[in-house]
Length: 165
Length: 160
Image (cartoon, rainbow over all chains, first blue to last red):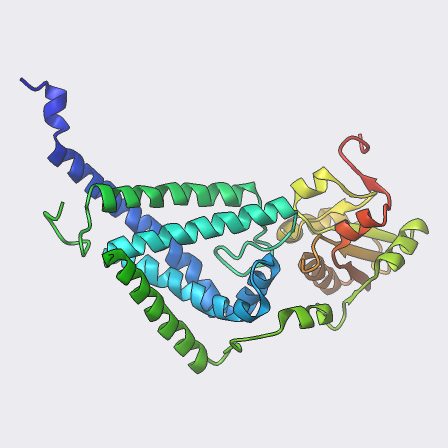
């Protein structure tokens, strides 16, 4: 005999809960990347200056990186919201978050006062521990998506798809 | 394997869109730019000049300049040029009037931050210039240079 609690938490129910939570997280994380990418697309020249200030890339890659990264953020954000190519999208999201956090930590360790370039190209958007904490929270949420997509195998192709658990 | 192909496809699509858009947009930037060669030529504005560490030290020793720290308040609290005032660039509009109301417009003002490419001091200098201050100069990489030259600083233990 299953207890009442065990009946409630059957595998099917927990998968549905994961599905609902993952959709919410996908919307939030997708919106974050789109919000972060658009200002950089609009002012690529300033963003290239921000990238240079990080002192992590050789000169020849700075402009190419500044041109492509914002579009990558917007594309991944949109695909995450729409649930397209979830395995690839989620892995790229996590790789980008790891890179962002590593870059921020490195510059905090170096003691450089540079603009974050996270959500804008505003020079007043300075890196501090709050910035790193915020990125770690986002990273934890994106790790949850890895769990949902690769362990729980919830990879609905669209946000409207049903019964693909 | 499926994920790998998806990643490659996303990267290729991104490259096409981003590089294509950069080619047709009005404010296109070149794909390659010698950043390091041009960084020494940075000018913040026609009205703002940068000051060398030796000139800044002379003005400091003769007590002829006010130093404004454009870094964050937490960085300022961890150590700053002796007697410098804290005016973080991101809070400049909120804090400037309280801070600078007793500074005469003709007084020498030196803004500084940290890092060879830090532009906060330049931005703050332009902002102050727009407010009517006539003698504003930016000390690029100020905090590092000040320490390297072993000039007087206020640290948390010494400033109390």
